[in-house]
Length: 430
Ligand SMILES: *Cc1c(COP(=O)(O)O)cnc(C)c1O
Image 1 (cartoon, protein in one colour):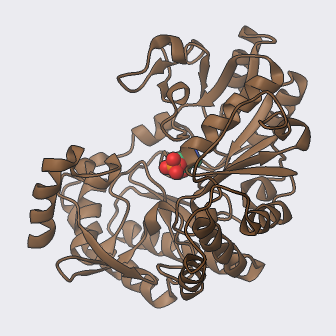
Image 2: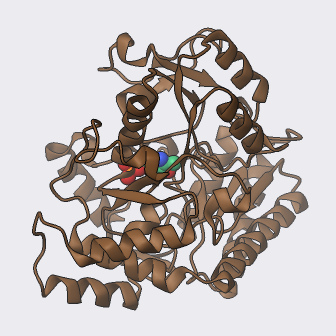
Image 3: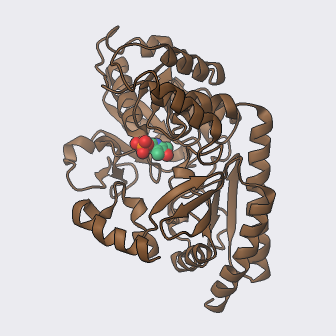
């Protein structure tokens, strides 16, 4: 790993921490990051010539596998026409219609460049539409690096949140209430304490930024009811789960219609594109129709629209989602079997093309607190042993894993076999 090592030292001299997004630094797995040279299908290749079976998938977009020929071709064709015009184009209509076709809660959709922009704009829109200020979010859910959403629970979960980053004034988060995922009582209480003041509730319908936590006991349906009763705009942040967990995204899978939906990752096919959309009545509050301002120089960029459209058109059939679900099930159940063989306390979760690995013997893992109680040392050993055998997992125990259509059963078997060594090593320190 000499070349990666050298590049990391060089990068640190001109890029903060050597990376353009912190999780890439590998700091939570206590080693230096690999610099990637190229990727194809289920593999990434580093600049030292090593190959890895990749379960990060660029953090979600690569659901068809890396550098899929259909996307590559669409991008090349689009570049022949020019890169950006700052004026309306046909590919934007194609993309909007594709999204609407598959997500029935969306009548109108606005394109942006990142998930962060999508959630930030959806929050502003909900506030503009309702004329109220407060918002509810959930501990452990991540919605990008928006000031008002970078909060952690205060002293009690029912007080307003505290900024979780330096540089955010307390005043910015004083309107953000932090509730517990899968705990409907915490939501009821927050609403009761702030009657008629809550504009929006934002949630990842499947939490994918605190490992992978599924909603349970009709949690999402109950939230929908509470939002209806209290005229709160329900925002599903499906930046990760959109076209990932199911053919109809998480809202279709759980049969709950949000008022607004945020999308990203997969809809850009690997290029920067994201979106927020919902009911016409709400979306028409946006400029130029309405008083809520929102804009973007490169929004709806034709190259990004070409990549995203090719990705969705190739991906969207139910067989592909059965396939993804089957593959992630076979991976998680295979790993579980090996963990049990070595008596390593271990649990998994999975839905569609995403999965979670938990080093714990807790009966159920349904909140951020539960995830925090997992064994960090075991995860560290697992991650490092797997990487040394050519399996590239997310370098943090708070991230979900991703499967692509390019992950063959053979590669999944290889991964499960590699885990033998990893679980054996962990068993030695139990
Ligand atoms: C990745 C992610 C975001 C942020 O998207 P960026 O494109 O990184 O700004 C927001 N919400 C969720 C649920 C995400 O997974």
